[in-house]
Image (cartoon, rainbow, N blue to C red; front, top):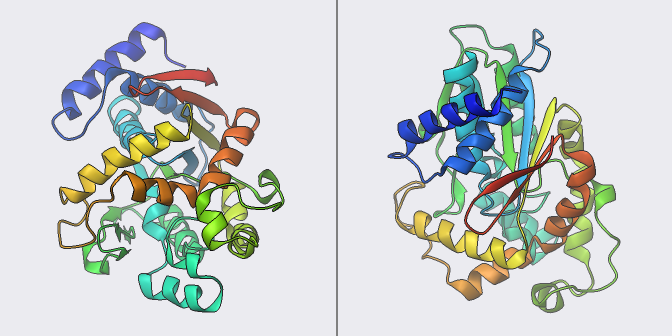
Length: 300
């Protein structure tokens, strides 16, 4: 781990370099520099270092991942490929099929079972085995259109990265972390999944490929936020960004209001609470993020 003075200086450099491109603060940049230093200290091998970053919706995972990638490149000479679990959602048509065949809530992207795990596995394998001039397309999902972006719009990574980072709200969560179904815990479940059919389906899906990927992490980083109200407020801020067209720029669904965001977050409440309970014992680095996006290292 770098000393405090060096970490602070590096964080200031990140803020100066990137503040015009993304919303960030010095606290997030300092956290990113510490994570990058921890990654750089991991034993090197022929394969890429694989890092998981998790946290509830709006916790700052995407920002932290980008900052860590920048810190790795600037201060450690390591190229990183950053990927979001969100970009591996099943297509809208695939989720609508699940809604017909399994449960109507499967149409909503988010919980385990609504991702293309094989595509994720194949993308990671291709990155790990890439030669210097080979390119790997990284899938992208258009959240406003609620569908996977056309392959022609996917970003491309050239060569083999020294580090692969996978960020996502349920990254690292395991079936054993989820409690058995004993009845609804929120209004969404009472109205739309009172018997727990959708919930049980999602837990079963978690065992089909997700946990195998988690087993490959060399480092697991978690961001904890105070409560579900913070999750809701953070997600509303994301809605402003999405509605401004920063994620695809085309026509799509309108901005969700507070009531819609509350309903959206309730889809993931069980997983979010399981994440908060499990990560203090499982994460290698655990950060607590306050309502003003200040990061405090709790573990690591």
